[in-house]
Length: 490
Image (cartoon, rainbow, N blue to C red; front, side):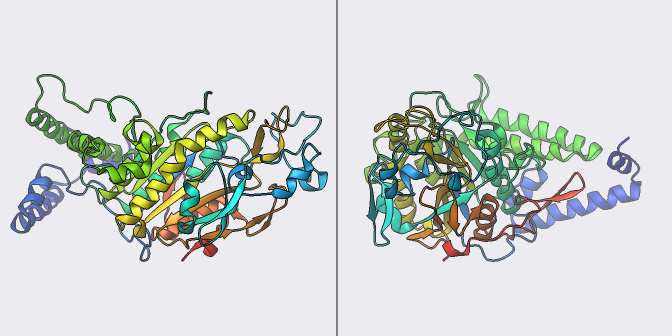
């Protein structure tokens, strides 16, 4: 028999009445102060489904919520953000050994006899008061560079998609760890009473090819209680399965059924002490609340045309990136702590000039619209927005190279991300890469540093947010050294 169960079954009669007496006293006290709270306590329902962990935040946060725009597949930094004009004169010449320096390659190009340089075919121009250089593929994002901090010197050890995505979003290449959204909802809870603390969307993409698979662990809770995992909104059909009651079941009948189920689950919890039973109770309750809140969330008919126009013409088409971006604003406005949008098919090993423009058109205007929408509502002051992928792309071509067509392999040594909003120094470009966008020459930023900085902006010391599992105090940033990226902080 497990120790906790044995302990509970051996409680004395006196201890039982002492426990239940105190519980009854709390309910009686609450009834004199807040009758609604008392009813919720008596029925086993909390008015705050995701409470903040005691002791958090560790200090005054700059950001209260996070919107993470993840470009799964790895956008090409050299075609979007890291301009290298001198490469034009080196077209089809071999990448110097002194630049590659024996660094690891993927199996997709390690067998190539040559590594010919493929300069970007896209024009760059300075934008905004800050003069940040941006590719012509991102004309809308270019208009908001004065609100962004562009980090050109991200790096990681992972060289393949699955471990790299798992690494940046959970802090470890090995599956099984909580995602950053789960850590934040576990530590900080949520201000939303009728919506999940952590919501995920996976919109469709325009490039006409298959994309890398997405795994639930990218928004999973790992060893944390499962109530902290991300709730995925579907891109087609009902946003959440089984949102509507079956025929013949009205809301009052559903409420009575859930109350009875909650009572049985509570009895099971008192017998076994299994925390996942409490998770089950909470998730049934949240599902009931979402039957009202999700239809209201996804009904954008009340949004004025001026707001819809910010996001672009696809905003009214469910399942697009633009529609997801608008829902992200509506979610954080209603108290959701973390929203994660994973846009797929940025993996351009070949035919990059065909597919990269399509991907950019999917997200470009919507990213601008999201920032401007948050800004005009005063939400950008305490919302953190992060954009980027799991690694970068090589300067050399994978496969056949021509003046108008090329592909790029995975490149973990340097890539670009941007951040905006609460606590971020706007109009900033941080870090410098070499003339080939291959190695970092100034201000490297490991993905652990990025995660430590995100937690810091949310009021969390990354060394102090931990969870005991397998004999270790587990952290999002692990046990290796992580530093804040102070150069992008306001």
